[in-house]
Length: 323
Image 1 (cartoon, helix red, strand yellow):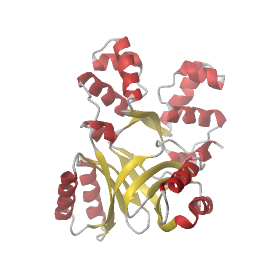
Image 2 (cartoon, rainbow, N blue to C red):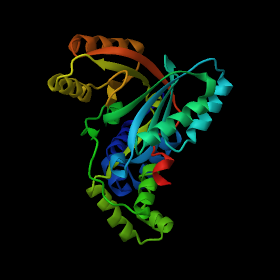
Image 3 (cartoon, one colour):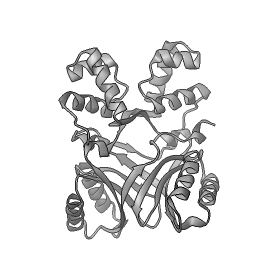
Image 4 (cartoon, rainbow, N blue to C red):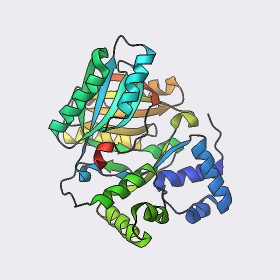
């Protein structure tokens, strides 16, 4: 666990809410000099507390739908597992891979334009795993919300990403800007200008339009929960009551609970919700599960649970979006 002081916490607070905020404004918020702020920001990155700084993108408006894939690997040694993971990391449709302990070995986020492309991607992934595949589950995401700000005990507006219908027209330059900002949201207009061969002002106008059209929803950061003393457990929940009021009450509870850092609600599948729960010791997870059962015994039941051992990849957009 890395020690974080008050100025570091202030910087993390800004990065979670708006990781693209200009350094001058970041200095004022943290009550630090420009040099000290720059030093601390770089230090937090080097220590791995801040894993990445990203533009949050509405991938539905880029024509891609997100899906969760859970894989069980059987009869496999560490060397072969590492080989499979290394190959999966380079797959064009995969944005995130988590190494798990429990029933499932890997959790994977996959993007595809349509069912045909999704089926092809799934076939390729299963082929990479070969005869080591046990069970697997593919679930299309209906709604997702992230609450990463809870890692630093911060209250913040929820970021809910829903399915969209109207897609604006984008050109190659727009996609290139999105790609760069998703990889590093603090890339300056000047650096973008050098890369894209447009004036800084022209790039600024394009980014403002991407924000206005809700393609870029905001700018945040991916924090290393382990460096802050947390473990990340996943819970897979099955609905047993399907009326709108029960589901709304349950989602409201997830948004407000300080330990829930995200949820995925699925269109269909073996279970209906995936939750990410942050705790500092296992007794906190037990308390959370007991509370969940007490409050929502008539609404949900726990299907399975797992511990996230490692995030293999950062949650950036997959290559397929930019081909």
